[in-house]
Amino acid sequence: MVTPRPYDDVRVLDLTFWLGRYATRLFADLGAEVIRVEPPEGLPDRATSSASAHAFFNAGKKSHRLKLASPEGRDVFAGLVAGAQVVVLESGGPLAGELAWVCSLNPQAVVTYISPYGLDGPLADAPASDLTLQAAGGIAWLSGRPDAPPLRLPLDQSVMVTSVYAAVATALCLMDAETGGTGHLVDVSAQECIAHSLQNALQVFDLEGRISRRGGEGTRDATEDIFACRDGAVFLAAPPVLGVSWKALLAWMQEDGHPDVALLMTPEWSDRRYRTTAAAKAMFRAAFESFIRTRSKVALTAEALRRKVVLSPVSRIAEVLADEQLAFSDYFVRVGGMQLPGAPYRLSAPVWQAGAPPSLGQHNTTIA
Image (cartoon, rainbow, N blue to C red; front, top):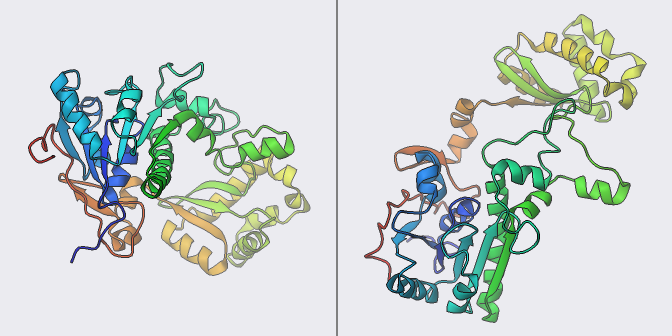
C-alpha cells in the first residue's frame, strides 16, 4: 500500500521559470500533480539552466505544451485551470500579464503571482537578477567582511528564499480555500521575502535604532570564525561569554602543552571590545591555527564534542556528497541519471520519490 502524501489530490499548474520553480517542486515532493504549462518553445529555464539545475527544480513534474496565444490553447488552459486547485504565475512568464483572466477561470483556486518586487509600486516593472534582488532585499549588505564591499550569496539564494515563502503562503491559502470555498490571489515579492530573512536586522533597528552591518561569518569576535587545520577547515565559536566553550578550549590547549595558551589567558580577553580588534583576531588566529594545524577535522570534532567546545568541520561539496549522516537518511537521490538533493524534510513514512524532469510536452496526451 502506498502511503498518502499531503497533496495527493491537488493539481498545481506551474508557469514559473525562475523565482517560483522551487516552490512548485516542493508541492510535487508532497504529492501534488504539478504540471508545467509550457509554450511550444518551452519555459525559459529550459534554455538558461544547466541540466542538473533543470532536473533538480522540475523533478516529479509533468509538462503540457500549449500555444497559449491561440484560441484553442487558451481553451485547453481554461479547462486545466477549472480542474486545478493552484496556479502559479511568474513575472515575465506566460500569462503574467493576464492575471485577472486567469483568476476568473476558477474563483475557488489559489493563484500565486511571483515577481521581483510585487504587483504594484514604483519597481513593479523593474528588471531584476539574483544580484539586484539580494541587494534590494538587504542580504548583500549583511554578507561579507566589514572591510570589503557587500557580497552576493552564491547559488541564486533569492530563488530559494522566494520559493519557500511562496510555497508556505500558497499552502496556507489552499487550506483556507478548501475549507471556505473561496480562492485567493497571493502576491509574492522576492524583495520582501529576502527582507524578511535578514536574521534579526529589522528587530535591531526597531528596538535599538541601529543598522546592522556585515561582519563576516563570525568575525565580530576573534574566537568565532573559520580556521585552517590539517585537512581543511573548522568553524569555532568560543567567546568568553560562552564560558563552557572558552574555558574548555583553554584547558585543552594547556593539557596539550601549547605555548600560545598563555597569550589567551591575559585579562584583556574578557573585554569584548578588545576581542573585536584586528590585533586580537590576528593573535587568536595564529595561536589557534598553530594548535590545530596537525589535527584532522574528524579528530578535532570528536575531541571538541567530548570537551564541550563549540566546533564543527567545514565540509567541501565532495564531503557533503559522501556524508555518512546524509547517506543514512537517503537525502541524495538519483534523478534523470544525476545525483541531486532530495526533499528537505522527512515524513512519517519514506514515501518521497523523485521522478525525472519532464521533456517538453511529454504529458500532452495523458493530462485531461
